Length: 407
Image 1 (spheres, rainbow, N blue to C red):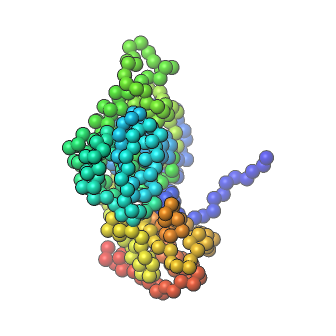
Image 2 (cartoon, one colour):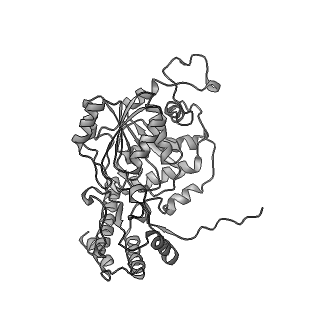
Image 3 (cartoon, helix red, strand yellow):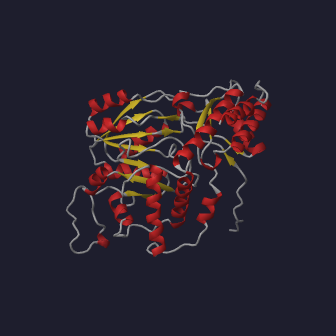
């Protein structure tokens, strides 16, 4: 079978992720491979750990990468922290809270759920009341859920978890580097992320950080793989973690000075993840968050300037993605196709109860910049006008320009 080289069409990815990777990240990925125990490679692994401590804002020694998409990080955290029968509390306010629930169920945990309407978030007292009732081992909550565009406030939850003896895990795939996040100050025990949103990289690597308390829980189940075992290895610990690939006890050994072999490191993805973090640290985390806040405000003002309605509780939306109610009589998927065909711009569709009801537009990572916002708003105005929607002419770009003038 003859096949041609891949020539991807140009797209500006303005959906909720993935986004266009920063060209500097793509260049880093094209670097030559080296062996996983080459001193250069182990040095880069150590540098990557240090860089992600700055990104997560943590002093955790156990800060590293899981080779796989952001979902790989979630599975690694949950399968390593949970034993069958452990109680887990999952506050669900969108699709990805349901994902945490499903993964925890696959760990044979006893999963308890509280739910908020899609487009809203939880108050701390609601979560604390559920913790009192359930008495879970672990609270698992998404910070930013792109399915609804909402950002769950986390600042008060760490102290609540400490008072009740609960481990605190969050998935920050959609929110990290675009919204305020402080792992240590907020009392997180486990945090997982992905590259394909505000970190400006491709999907395929999942940064993770674990508190000393989480490391202790995981290491109670530490086992050495049979083919690596040597005399004196202690193999009398607790119930073995149910996944080999996602066994965080073994992965921590791999990233430690022991370099106990676990898998062949995904070298090109490590290059990408390292460059994503390096660029953020160079920019400064506060500056990166401020950049996402500015361009997110401009996009929100722009869609409102066109006369469109944003979805959900705008006061609790992520900086980096906005949901838009699809105007009556408009075929949302047909309009998305037109936007791609005529302008090479992709915006997001929606899931579950919001399918066919909203679009989602992202301003994140490399695309959190003025020209991307203004071009998207101008193109959106034209395709909506073609679909017969009455709009405020120039209202989108005009409103966004006012935000940029304010700074």
